[in-house]
Image (tube, rainbow, N blue to C red):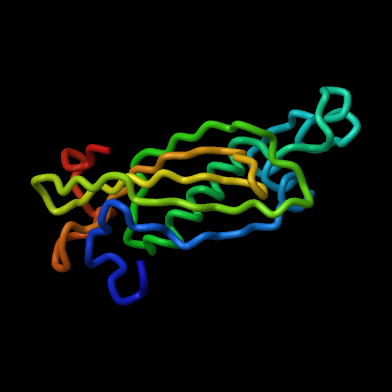
Length: 159
């Protein structure tokens, strides 16, 4: 979405999100694991990762969830509220790689209230290799004067 329509017009099935490329550094992988209190050695220690059969340390699932969330909210703006996030890690994400995030709108459900539920499928890839596939369902206002999904009553929150 662009600035003129962000939060005011529901996306359409087939809309593509702009691609995002993030350089994955050793620092990002270690910081992500540390902040999520993931002390598994394959996220911090290259020698331990090699002993486990990996070529280097790998990004953990919490860091991937955070980056996927960033990708979707960079597009939706602050009015977008994530309701569901699921992903499957297909291949390890190693440091010193450029990971490309790409996505598209696959479903839009304007429920009876003021919220539109938007489902986006996302891929994380390194060159031509699929690393992670994800699906995010998030809420946007259904129309310009609709209330924010951040202010809906719990009975209206049905992701």
